[in-house]
Image (cartoon, rainbow, N blue to C red; front, top):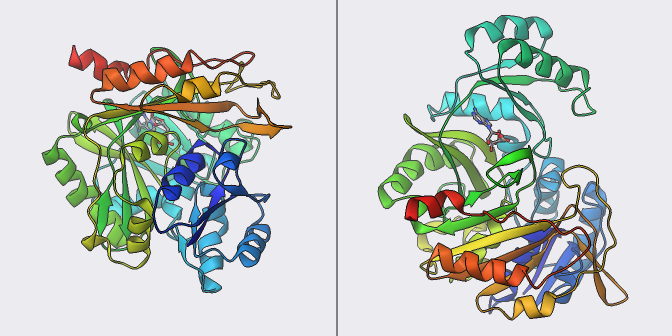
Length: 420
Ligand code: AMP
């Protein structure tokens, strides 16, 4: 079969890599892809903000299966549009993707289904905001309702700063676009875990758990990014806790929506148990790079089972041990940065045992791979232990050079501290 992947980042590179390993797959296409993806898939240009353009690519290429990577095409209704044309596509409908695209919708859904989450208030006017803020104790978390690429969450040390942040989200000063709804939320403390699962609307196949590192600086300091590194081990969640999360969080969400696709549950493991921080309606980036590296089963077979409502007959097999993915970014990211710098050392890095390099922001210029984004590469590795996986990823990273390369040297620090 021929599989089309929509997207252009490290997540899509990892998806293309995993899909290509399937015996069922003859050709992998990616739209638009990037410099690294082009080495293993045929890339077709497309604008991911343009629904008609994406539908035209599917019409021309006629893939047997389309997998949607990022949230933007989901929010535009790509799944509905392709399904209407009788095509097989993996991802939630526009309505189901609202679990990610509207935080207000997600919070009301969680409350309606008695799923544990932080106390909150949804406000649509400045008046509502002024009244609601009184019931919260500082720190207060202020969130814009819609998709904001990780920039719509502000943790405020006092009621006054929360009001200021909320007003600048309403006015558009903070995000460039004025928020229609704002969510005030109780601040939760604990360890964050990304729990992803494949869902067929009824049944669930959990993926290996992962922990992301959102801040740019070591020791989790500085501004938030799309994710600077991630690791996956079985010890992140014990079997009993995983079962609890499946029963009390994942199942009611998947059945209540109903949700077909990848449900990404962002959890805070608090003293009063796991609480949902957010839902994403797709594979995470960079979680996918670390998770798929550990997947021994056929990803395409599992995705097909999800589309057909047959996930109850699927059990995913995982490589024991651990995996990690360290992200290399351009100097200046997550602020402004320059691009177009040649990248060297990719082949010697790829020779380190257990290592896979996934490209996030690269392009190919006359055969030379150059930087083209803020996050440039994810160097991922597996190993019998987290220490081994990280050692391999950092050994490979040391081979790679481009002007201004930056990466965190402390990926996995929480788990390593516990292991000691
Ligand atoms: P979200 O997009 O809602 O997941 O928020 C992005 C990040 O903000 C999360 O990964 C958390 O680190 C942080 N965050 C969001 N909500 C809360 C909360 N209620 N308490 C503490 N931290 C939060």
